[in-house]
Image (cartoon, rainbow, N blue to C red):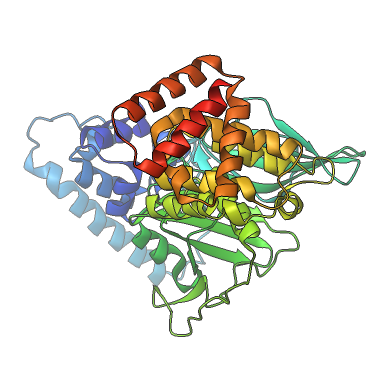
Length: 488
């Protein structure tokens, strides 16, 4: 068994991680990893420290056999060195007194024949040239890294990274260049490939939520927020939680930047949950403190002394619906309170939407109606509707710009709300203007014809409520009118 295997076995027997053992010894986790894989050997100082921390005798740790025992020596055996030394001193003194010439140059000792690599003699392993890199230990126990920028080789860039699913290839505005997203399990690599000779590939983004991945300062998912602050200090920028898509749910995050290059550390409940490194290209300064959502650190704490309130943009009800819907379907980092508020915006503002304006907000040049159809599909596919949401859907029947194919889609939304709770749908009709109420009834009944089973069940539920006295007098009138529309 090698020294490395003995170190590894001793560490695991104590239940220590490489990082924990390194902290005890005052060395890096990387150094412990190299010892355990026999890439290098610890020097004598570290061997003695390892023996102490692991509770393994030094001779056992190094595999050195104990000196054999000997029989007692006679007294002259112990006096012999002293006698020899004295005789040597006499001889040297005599030579000096006789005026002998200078001593001849002694031959150099023969070079050591030891070939075992040590930390002092082995060539240093390649290391990242910047902070904007990810490191990990491969299956062979050797440390690898990948950093932003142009690479000497093509993917996987002299590493053992392997795809866990096919690469996503995205065309760009530059005909010879494609953007590629490579999911490699612990690390997701994004890079640009230029298909001109010589072919060049440049890593533009790295991201990970795996605890096996870390930055050159040994911070990664699973590190404490305190460790992060100790490693980077006031070079970090404190940022409020991101809107829209983010790598992983978080309370807040920290940015470390150098021009367009950035490292992001997503933190939740005092622990780093995910890390990302990206070349922002023309986005240099994106994470500079603005005292609104991004703040400098002073002695490890965010400095809110210059905090400003964001200017409130005057936006239309139509755009508010678009923003709220976009958050609901794209932001996986919403709290329950935020999700409820956005849902209220979507349903509560339907009566005030201008659907032609919404088309401009949410569509594309090739598919101008895609945003409207996405919202209608979402509204129709809800698992449940509250009474107030049913009322808002009914009132939305009179919204501006609802015509043609838009009307057909909205009819479908209303029929689904009707099928969900026919009695509540009937009761809510009493709370809206008569013209709007008439539209809501006709819209719901029009689409209900496409669902005969659901329509029959809805009619039966309303009739049972009418017979059971569940409606007020005016509610009963509108419920009867709805039944008539549905059964004609």
